[in-house]
Image 1 (cartoon, helix red, strand yellow):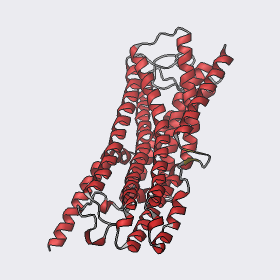
Image 2 (cartoon, rainbow, N blue to C red):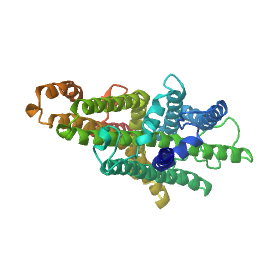
Image 3 (cartoon, rainbow, N blue to C red):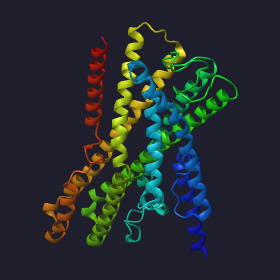
Image 4 (cartoon, rainbow, N blue to C red):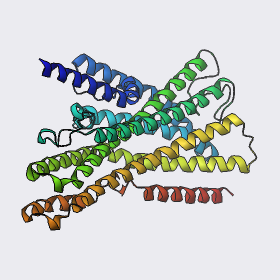
Length: 422
């Protein structure tokens, strides 16, 4: 009876900690029906799919007139750049919804769920006795529990900051339009009458009521629907990687002390299983996000070129920039660069954590061990010696070197565009 009560208490405690770690990200993903659940009734699944469909439809309603406007002004470089900075973002958001939904419900139905749900029963479980009952592979010490909470807290900080920046950017875009101001490059071709948040072209007259109010409301809804997948999918990635990295850190710490373990073979076997499980989780992330990373990096690079070219022209031509407009530019550019940096930093961080496992195994003074025990480490040494990277479409790894190269390439293209313009 006592044991069952203790188990129930532990399950409740784990649930509280888990909800604390994922609450912000879960709230946003649930709104658009993308939060992965381990168990769902048919009704719940259909409602999630309906919310996803509504979010994608709302974005499409703004994307179609934006693409129509792009066709009409393709010969004007400044108007083209002004249009692409919004159209490409909407394309990114639509792709994130499609990719994430497909991996959640299609052939990879259990992939994202695995990262999120696996081992939640011992996510924050701990014991102060490292060698309790010989179950070193299942019991977490208070130090290891602290590592996991610290990493979860780091992920929460990243999530909170990204939400603040995205909310500020969307609020500026909407607020400026309400008061008759805009950050966009306005001409009679794109905005013949009343201003809208996005550069669009409708086949009917939107300067009259209620057409204007309907178009404005649709674009506002589309901006918020874009903000959710744009931020939430990336935050889910960071949350997953920080969780995996904390487990790698714990495994690294345990491997460092492997030489003092008495039941060497059984403990090493459990460590190999843990390492295999973590490698499988990383492979799941790679499978889920790799193709999306490649598309996003191409679009992000194009967006950086658009913003850089647009801002440079704005200052060169003596275009007046108000304080609110400048704040909007800074917010959007920081958000854009921050997301690219986050992808590469997370990839670099995960690679460094995996490399530490190899050094932890090597530091066990295997040359002083019993030959049988030393031979048991060979396969683990060989496996951990293989470099592990998250990649963008299997084309290039996500590292800070890649991020710096991308910024250099963007700067080069901006210089070329400025030369062509002059």
